[in-house]
Length: 389
Image (cartoon, rainbow, N blue to C red):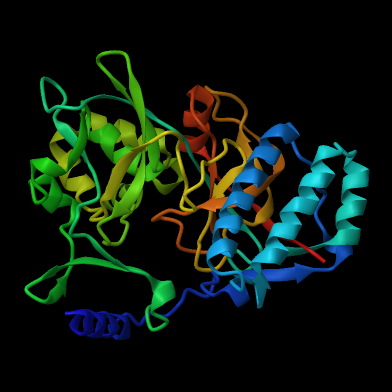
């Protein structure tokens, strides 16, 4: 069965040929370009350094785990392959600099002297689209009862995930299940909604199919139960089908204009059109599975840090690495007005919709401001990665 499984996977990979879009880099060598020191950005940070130190510690924990398993491991960093030890040293040195709380001028001088800076090529002009995500709250029950009818499913036991890193012939991970010696696709969102997984796979139940759908997009959330307790749920896998953007579907139907797209606008339309909601949501065949955890985690299996974690394309950017972003964000929890911001961040997450060097998601945490920022943020900016000389 193992030989058959591999043969099927290689056949799938051979059939998946597509022409990359020229405006967005799809390979590490094309995704980052090194800048001379005189072209470095103005390294201003609009936040307190305490959260940055916490995020750095979490990336260091990720690198320590990799180094313990494979001391010689390297990660692609633009056109180079960089040793894990070098990435660890980068974070350790930057943490020392941050702990000293330098002035903006002193910080810029130190970085010019000690660090290399790489800019994302983004859409081909260096521009990156910044969006956001947050930690939503849902109302739930451990049993299917009353208004709690929508399940959050745990990852099924028969889910097979073949990692791209283990099979160089693959251009991406392949997910499915084995049936009579054949690898077949896992059920789609619509099929799961019709009960393809059965009732035993439910982790818990929530009172809104719409909230459950948007939870999948965010990746983690808090479920508050009737007895006053709460649990964090976080990403545990997906069914392997391509992510389909519901916002793009609503634009295609003429229900919304592209320039008015936001999470708030999409959710508002779906609430106002309940008869069409199921069909529209089904245009995204991707489905996310969840598990209980102590804190929301990203793709590196470390907790994500509000305002300091970003989700980027793991195929082209070095995971866990130190980065710097410049863009605009909402002014406050109720405003649609934006103001410039810049900060150091850690590349600690990924997402089904983040499949290009021209898109980055910023994690805003929880609360009213986080929800507003995540829902409305869709602004151009710049993305840089730092590496110790």
